[in-house]
Length: 203
Length: 328
Ligand SMILES: [Fe+2]
Ligand SMILES: [Fe+2]
Ligand SMILES: [Fe+2]
Image 1 (cartoon, rainbow over the protein chains, first blue to last red):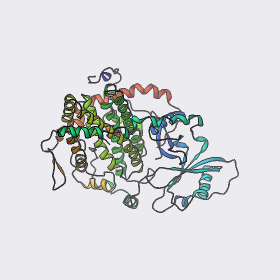
Image 2: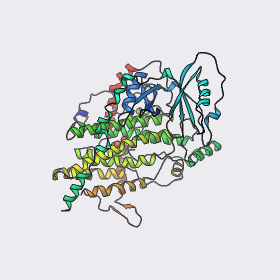
Image 3: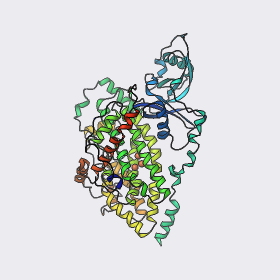
Image 4: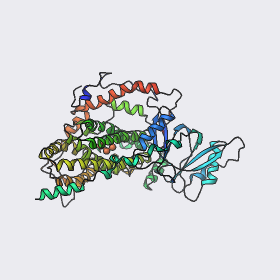
């Protein structure tokens, strides 16, 4: 290939120009939902997704995609398929009004994490944890515990054991973030240089 | 976003008259109230289609846009500039990931988007079909092409589709670094030696025509455009965006003592609008249809990367995985 860039010229000759075999499903892997704790003492919030072949890789890619700057205290990921989702409400309807009350089931209980959408267009925010014997029951308990006056538009429920958390010994992953000044707009102050230039060019 | 010059599909005006009128009314009322549309909501086919197209094109533009700048990382003047440019290019590729995810919530898989880019079925911002001959060309992109992108992105962040708006909020936060960095580079060239000043002036001469193309041709206001504006898919006309860009950046370019290669360029103090030589839209069309200086190279680089990565994706593939659209 002809190019200004020697690295492009060196690219190997493979395949056929302008053609690619259609990709099989999952060539780009499944999706994982990413939650970030921007600061200690704040709740975890949903930041987006990554594509990954497994939970562990999802964690690594999430760190790279969502925590390159500002501050980060912790991060976790979960397979999209492991998120249970309530209906979505609008206007002044609280979605909890649509969630049925389920009588206490007595089988073994596990922990579920609960997330609220406080406003359409915003991110889901972690509000707490309940102990329940099924996701349906978790919704119902969340309704008892977390339904306040403020309208909630959507609720997510995730079984805690499905989540790949940041372990304590991994928390130093973000310690060097404040040192990466080269990623920060504030590092590129051209004002002084510009003033000097303007003064000189007036003369 | 790179390129207001989004190509929207020509759709006959009755193409949404088949939609359920009650659902359509609810949908429009929600947008009217300023509430965002989320992936699980009912939406008109036309809305879904145009959003997929727009977000996907935006994503492709981030990926392809990383190429003309990426090629300068190893040759950027000094360690600091190399670090900065590397961080910027990484951001741009990250933007593509965020945007592809947002488009995926509307039901198009990432596999399909990547294939459509490589085969030329999907478009990307035309401006990246031009070469970066010198370091100054790279600085022009970092400062002014990103500035144009920010004008578009800030407007679109007020649109109606939740996942796209959230992606844009993240993107705009990073763009402020790109803009500052780009301006910093150009200030240094401007206040440097005569040779450095000439270098940027030459880059400006090369890039001004594609920069004027960047926001796309003046839109004919059709009923179709009106619908997309009512649904807050399209947030302003191409001419409005171009005018806003000129308003913000022409004074900054002039301040540095450079000459913009258009003798007609001036702001009409009565209308408040900029006047300029009409850009060559024939060239724009020719390049967008594949006949620009770098179209072939850009797509080849992407295609070969895809071919070379195949074995890695194969090796990591988890046979038990199932695919669902991401949630938000
Ligand atoms: Fe970008
Ligand atoms: Fe850019
Ligand atoms: Fe950028």
